Amino acid sequence: MSNIFIIGSGLSAVSAAVALVNRGHKPTILDVGLGPEQEAVELKNELAGCLPGHPNCQALDQLKQMDRASACGIPRKRWFGSDFPFRSLEKDCQVESVEASMVRSYAEGGLSNVWGAALQKVTASDVEQWPLALEELAPYYDQVLNFLDLNGNPATNRLPSLRLSLQARALLDDLESHRQKLARQGISYGPSQLAVRSQNGGPIPGCAYCGLCLSGCPYDCIYTAAGTLRQLREMGKIRYFPGLFVEKILRTGNQLAVEVWNLHENRREALEGSLILVGAGLLSTARISLESLSYYDRPLTIRHSDMFTLPFLRFRGDAGVFTEALHTLSQVFIELEDLEICARRVHLQVYTYNDLYLPLLESRFGAAGRLLHHPVRALVSRLLIIFGYLPSDVSSSIEIVLPSGGCRKVVLLGKPNARSVVASRKVAWRLLRRFREFGGIPLVFQMAADLPGGGYHSGGLFPMSSEPVFPATDLLGRLPLFEHVHLIDASVLPDVPAIPTAFTVMANAYRIASLCPVPE
Image (tube, rainbow, N blue to C red; front, side, top):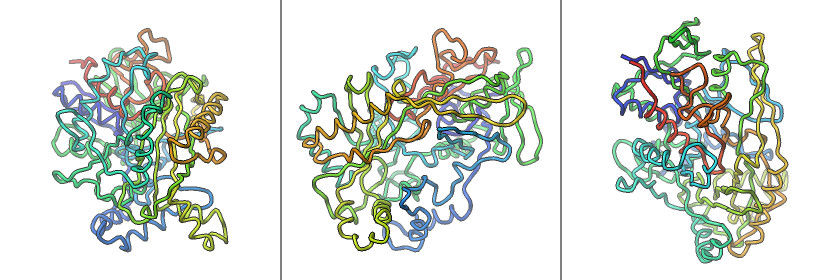
């Protein structure tokens, strides 16, 4: 029997695991597998027991104290106050970042524990420079939707519809009244497509619209890879070995082995395998691959989709935003296609009210914040936050180097792209010119850009190619010298489109795991 290893437990890893299970195999997942502290688990369970019927429960007050906004901004998203998705390991190498911002995850389920759950398929224009035709990738989106099990329409594999917030409905109503005009100008829009369970069915309830999405879902309605991993383990379809830190892959003749550090027993082990799929997340996959190839002191390029944030003030407010039941993930997707901005589409995600906005703005007014409470409330009732994403061809990039000499360090160097600044400003001014159609104005001079690597939309370190030359991989994510080692995460994207990449990464991982040869 083949000994199949999958390294990692995030979105790409579980997608590949499901594909292999559907082929009749029982893969083994090697993972560090960090989990949350017991206090965070207890807080989650307490919230699930008291919300949404008792919005003044003590657990909710405790959570709000943990995730308080300050004058410096909104804190990084955590899981019920726990930072376990971002927690580092003493065993791992240090990341030295210069003008770059990237994270690793050693959590069970990876960054899907705290992701924005945005799902969107690529179009033909997104992938026209890819070695894969859209038709070769498209069937695997449906395979992914099958195991996401989000209560969409099984006949069409459509995502479920979540109830829109008051602000989102008002925005879409304004846009809809100008649909044809906006279409002629290359602007399309619609409710966000999210990996969120919207209806009650089975053991997992549907969205309760409790507004805690940015702190964690008490009801597990937001999809996580950890949920699929748990189901596969309970059904006996996979083997799961947590507590293993993968150092590198060894090749001796035709034999493969994964060299791991056993964190439980504090010793090194070599696990022999016949097929290895690497879905450890961009930085960990890079470290494992470069160590395995002994590729030191030479820079490689990570492609990135630059992100910017843009406050948007609607002409009409709605006092109901402070009390309505809503979800606080992205509410509206907007696509801009304009050759004056860039050759490929720009993606915008619109976030409406959440409980962090009011204290954030009050804190920025300092001591006068409480005196200005009512004017600030009026402002917040009109406020939207737009997250904008640019395609990688006009975005920054990141150089990554693995130094030699056993110094246990990865160096990241951000490479800003002047075209990114120009493109994001053009987007903001484009929205300003369309103030009538959008029913409001962007606060252009409050626009802020993240560092290269920020926003988690990175990839393309080992891009797939029909004629691969290192660092490119073939169409099944294979590097030279490692015939039965396949990279399956965002590392192998040929470039990074502006739209959310998670769905495409999962579909491609499913494709690779479905097509890769399995040695006897």
